[in-house]
Length: 151
Length: 151
Image (cartoon, rainbow over all chains, first blue to last red; front, side, top):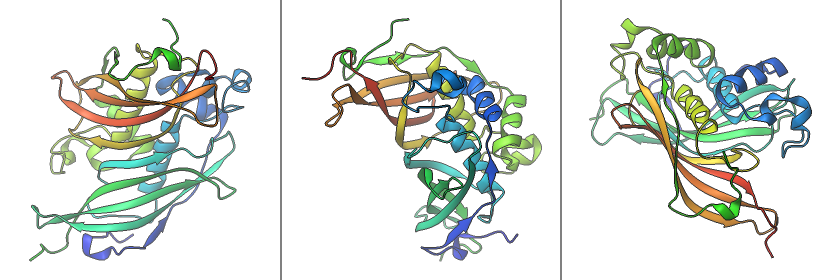
């Protein structure tokens, strides 16, 4: 797939990804290593939690989202290089059996003031489940190289 | 360790964690699964990247941060239950051999308007390396139960 430079992006463009099916073993495996809290580890105990059932760690959803994006249509030259993000929210629990995919919408293009060879892209990334319900969204600030230096 | 309820928190409290040493195998292992971009996978190629050397995926740093917090001093009753985050930034690359730890500072306490049994805590979490340089920070909005319902 063609690598995209700063000049190739425009506000309103939307990029999609493939899908990833998450299962109970993946949820528990990630949680054991990075987020060992009972509602991510124990199906029975999770029923009494605010999630009312086993739910993936939000950081697991974030990691899967990144993988889907790396494998998806959104291919900035130089990679998906985030310097930070804001407004991350987890709007719905991710359950065993959910199939996740991501849509990335370009919100803003900012040429760099100090570096004529690159710019910053603001991109809103929303992760959906198989019912097209948003489970996570965040806005990323990504560094993207220019094909030609800004004059 | 004692579980903390909404009433136990106060603006300005700081909670610490233990340390986690990250190595090359961990960086590459996480990247293979969740963020397979060359600057997280290939030590040689990464030298030519904006990171100028192998660097952990930011999502890996975020996941390690969560694990340090779950094992650390900050123990809200009901768990560390984030509904969202803002202003996440990765201020410095995380390198093989870095030893990470986290400090969490309570910024704000918001009693829930609709739910007398809980409140929201705004907490700034900063991850440092062994040289006490910040490598990541973000502000979390966490749901915390009250010991006694608000009157």
